[in-house]
Length: 276
Image (cartoon, rainbow, N blue to C red; front, side, top):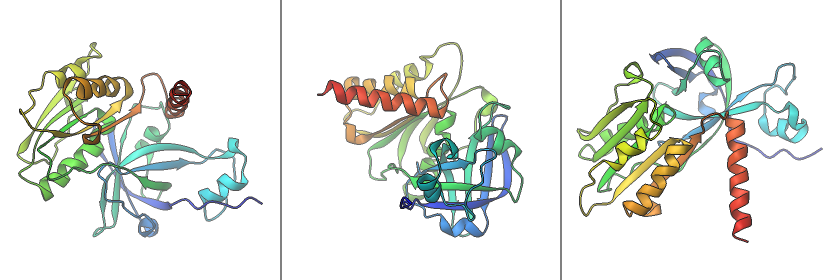
């Protein structure tokens, strides 16, 4: 029998759901497994949500390490990556926001149908970014998939660095998808409504006036196409350092998470091969 490699996991219970906008659902978790989750201090703390395969009987209590060691890969649960919107140790609540587009996808429909008492296995968290309260100023750019991380970062700044300055550019489907964000007074928020121009978000960032002689800390996450375009812009045209950038393509148009992860792995392999 193969030795199971232990993975951090928590079995969380749904306490309630909240409809934040027509296409955004917040699921608030807690329950006996809340203490099993160990926050890491990052505002982009991400977790893997575990969705079992239908008809497969898993060990009880569920242990993802045992499943990966003893079950064939085709029976492994499907995972989806989401950002922790907030972790409230006092009230023992953990919230995750889901984009919902009807019956398509896996996690969105689950969240829309979730009821108090439902359980979900959460792996992690991972993460690498938290806003630096000493930065000259902050740049946040994203779409719906990045809204939870950006909202968490702005709240952190509002608490720890209320004099922080920044520019926030967010693209959502329409005005109904805008959310009320808690941010320092010096952080301006611009909402864009998605239209026919795929370059609208990068163009809005290119048009921003950066404070002269000051280096921002930038967080640019969301659809892979605009993240790639803004990576070039911020590094080559704005002269930012890689160390001041947090960039991640959470998803790609026309791909589900499995397809996007496979595509990223292939791109990394090609880059390594090209380097020899």
